[in-house]
Amino acid sequence: MSLCKERLVHEEKLEAVLSKSNGDTKKSKAVCGVCSRMYRDPKILPCLHTFCADCIRQREPFSERRVNGERRSPEDDTHRRDSGSTILCPECDSEVDLPPSGVDGLTTDHLALDEVFVETLLVDCRVLCDLCSESDAGKRCEVCGVNLCDFCSQAHRRQKRTSSHSIQSLQELKSQGRLTRPVLCSLHPGQELRLFCEPCDLTVCLECAATFHHDHHCSSAHEVISHHGDRIRDLVVRSLRPRLGRLEESLRRVDTSQEALQARADTLAGEIRAFARSYASAVEAHCSSLLRSLEDLRSQRRNQLHLQKAQLQQALSDVRGGVDFAERLLTCGSDAEILSAKGVTMRRLMNLVESGFDPQPTTVAPDNASSICFLPQESAGEVQGFPVVGVIHAKTVDPSKCTIQGEGGERGHEGQRGEFTLVCRDSSGEQMGRGGDPVLVSIVHKEKKGCTVEAAVVDKGDGSYVVSYTPAEAGLYSVWVCVKAQHVQGSPFVLNVKRKFRRHRGIFHCCSFCSSGGAKEACCGCTGTMPGGFQGCGHGHKGHPGKPHWSCCGSVVEASECILHNLGSVSPRGHLRTVEL
Image (tube, rainbow, N blue to C red):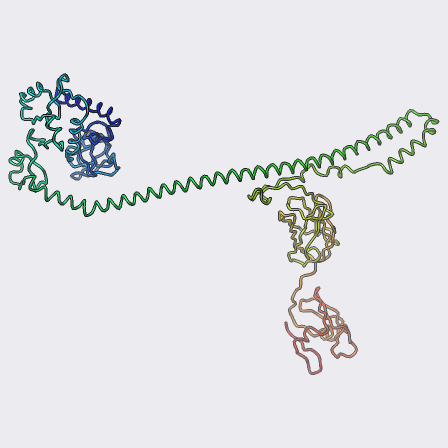
């Protein structure tokens, strides 16, 4: 059996024992966190996490660095994990740079090898020889890391390539307080690393110091360990250990906050669920109430319809009986038979005509229950302490109760926007709480039938409707306002549209007499004419003490004094002067 196979068989046996004793090999410090097997050539990454060399080689490169000016691509298998690639640490996900020599250039974790050694020695089971697998092992080769029986130990010493290996007794190793093994040189088997090369910052053996480091200053490891150990200890004690405490305290507080957050979230979740259950109960109760109200309305309307149907059926039966009898009498009866039955027949028919039930079809069942509607957004008060929405609306608009509000329904002005409000009400006079009723508005000039005014109706959604209009001509208009094709209260009504006041430009006198110079007509500044002569100056003119006023182009001025009198421009003779406006 080769040396590699010997070590592999030994490690598989040890892992099987550890798995049975510990339950999970990942809990052991001698087990790689990637392959979950005993460490094989453990290497330390720059983040100080240790993994098997083969496990590191199998990691996909996170990025490639330029080496000697050349960029290595991930597809280049030859340099994939060599020549300075970067990988992610399997433990902490940190980006770590591999040395130019690749994984082999990483520092070997001898402490991990010690852990493997400790696990091998301290496992509570019978240790067989790793070479023959027959006899109990009593010794161990520190170089090969295999357990040997006495016979295989002697054979191991006789082989040329393993004759220099250090073989110790297992009992002696177990009896030592601290189970360690010497750190041997990888270039010179059997040589322990006892020197430290300061320029190279590297531990070397005697042969390495004599060959590769003969011109370097090499000191004994025992001499320099205090200096370098103190530097490490100083970093740990002065900087990292206090930070570790702070980090642990911060982490503890974060954990406490997480626990408090989870507890608070659980408490609030319970409150939300309780609220949801209570609210759902209130909604269900409101739903049941709405359904009961709907059922009551349905029963009420159904009873009304049944009564109406019974009345109609009775009236139909009476009228049909009278008509059938009269038609049969007239068709089949002789003259004597008709005359003999005339009295009773006429009395019955007259009674049916005068006092019989004779409704108009349009007044029977005026709607198909469309007056009953559900308003999901309207507030319904509180149920079990919770506000709820949604009400059953059963009001029916009564056009005879609807009213018109606003001055725009009586008077308006030419070319100016006017408006009035239609308030729809039910049979009891209460305002409808909803919109949607068909409203028709017609505005027609009373003298000029072809002159109509377009009206805009805006539904406010609360039973009121704003009607706006802009008349183009002055005069009297007839306004029809209908709801469900029926006139509302006061419809049709008269709308009085007055002319728009127009400012006149030109020269005006105190009155038409002064303006006309005594002529029959006076010319206005707008080229219009107005009565002149003795149409009432009232300011001392002899023979014409008329009413002080003048008019032109639809503009009328009436006052106890002329409008220009207020300007205070009075002539020496008592006449108002002419003023240019």
